[in-house]
Image 1 (tube, rainbow, N blue to C red):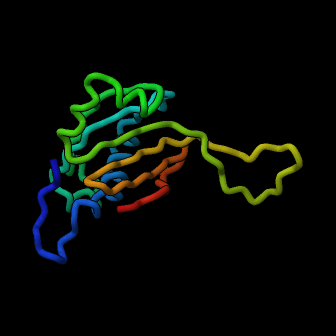
Image 2 (cartoon, rainbow, N blue to C red; image 1 turned 90 degrees about the vertical axis):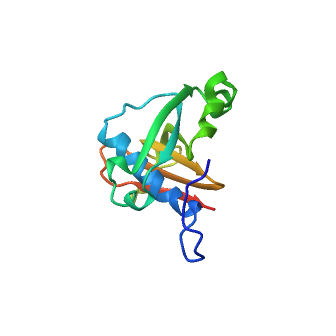
Image 3 (tube, rainbow, N blue to C red; image 1 turned 30 degrees about the vertical axis):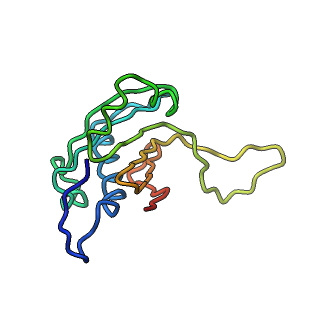
Amino acid sequence: MTIAHPSHPSAPGPSSFALPLARWFEARLHDAAVAHSPLVRMYGIDVIDPAMLDRFAPDAARPQFVAEAPSIDRLRRLPGSASVHQHDAIAFVSTRWMPVDDDRPSRPGEFGRRRRARVVHIVLDGAVAAVARFDAADAVVVLSSAA
């Protein structure tokens, strides 16, 4: 299933919705106070109004939890995971320990500082976007966006 959009050459294509959708979905998870999990969670997302994604309107899209497993490979092998292809986009949510930009010099043998972050990957019509939110942070960090 793909997102309906005007066929006008200057109209944004579905791939341009990947990053706004990733930011929107992470904001929904943050607002819902979804706890960190050692498992990777998979959601199917139906986009209702792409123009409302940048405004973080709760009804811009409709996420549906599909499954969770210790890894993406195991998620793909679960019996119900194929149902995610009935949606406009697929979201993978995981918790990672990510390096922190730190100005203080490290000492020999010292490991770099890391913070826990929730990472959201969106796959939408061949485009991929990933965002992360560190614990106790209001801002979302864009990790990647590619078409």
